Length: 74
Image (cartoon, rainbow, N blue to C red; front, side, top):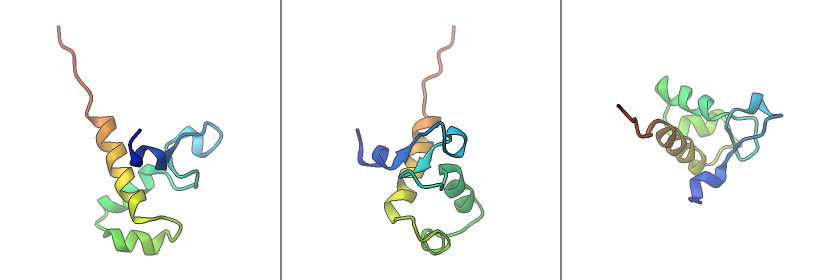
């Protein structure tokens, strides 16, 4: 397991089972949305002080991993 994978938690009883950061109620999508609005990593860390720099990287790696899947065509 990669280091970033240890930071992503899935708990069906928390945040509707959506992927979160280290068991916190901060969802991966929350971080992605903040990045999409143009906030810098430092601004996100100010906005969400429980986050660590590596959490933002983990959210990006998680999203990249989820989108990079093989497509089988017939």
